[in-house]
Image (cartoon, rainbow, N blue to C red; front, side, top):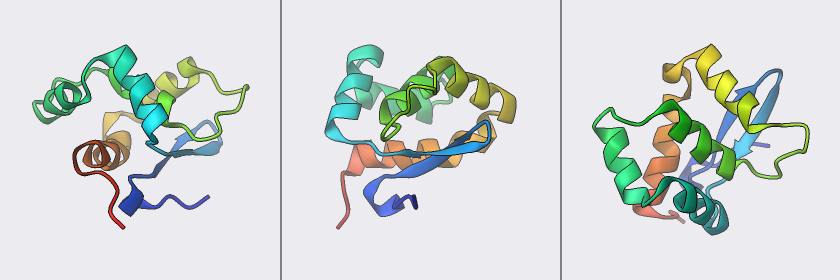
Length: 104
């Protein structure tokens, strides 16, 4: 699994495993249903007002092939344990995908 940043993909580590974040249409719709408008999410992130729970939710919905053993709490705990700065690059990739779409 090698993420393609040009397609808005990234990877996160939770415990000793790495998971591919793939912001598909279905994943982004699910995130939007929970978090509200994605453009507003991008604006909150740009203003430094994105909440930890929002980041975890966006990542959760974008995990490709999410295994049953992985829980949303595990994703949130990984972010809290490793720190927001460790996940900022992945967040930027996903938010860029929301704004710009796929680059071929």
